[in-house]
Length: 286
Image 1 (tube, one colour):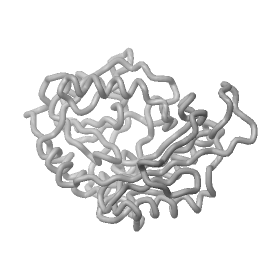
Image 2 (cartoon, rainbow, N blue to C red):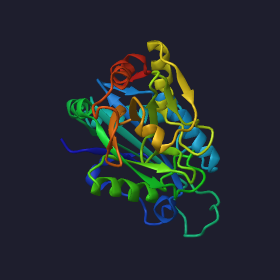
Image 3 (cartoon, rainbow, N blue to C red):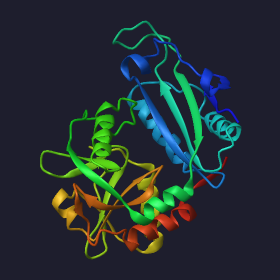
Image 4 (cartoon, rainbow, N blue to C red):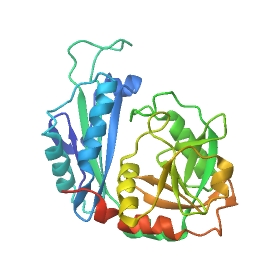
């Protein structure tokens, strides 16, 4: 079956889905996005994702491209038309199309693009069984990474560097040696005492939706969480390390910059969070 995309009011074949060359997302990265996991026929944590979308739009003074109540309908329809039971649905909102000028154009309607694609949950589960590797890179992004902007060039370069090093993810590290977050994920450790540690999300990182839901999962499992920074050295000495995102849930890290974490195998705390996640996360029928 051919893939279907939603572009500014129309459902079109994915191969024919285009935006104008003067769309400000293309010209200036003047836009935001969200990615929701689709699992077992449900869109996971959609209200939280749309809440974060609203915050990102507000921070950049971009209007909603459709009324907020209509967007979930569009997401479900794109998922349905693409027959996605397990995968992801991606939405992007830009300030719209206007003659190229740095200042905000007057009266421009925001652009909306929604796509969906399938994923293999068995492949993700197999990856979690063996764990993944991360490398560290110096923080070089703009200060407002709390906005889920489409301006992701530093993330692209970091992820490419990770791939070339045989790793799955790259962690941005600040000048003090403290881990901020991954190129497309939040960073966590589990201390020797079994406490989950992740950096506070008030500033300097994106408040991940999966990260937020993992707080609920941890509470259900009786696990303690500390919101504080941790160094690369502390991560290498931790009992467990993992990342979280909509596409990875809780994914064990078994090596950092080539150094093994603990015994070099996924830990039980991370896997318990991963296994309990779907039961706790909010599920919207797709």
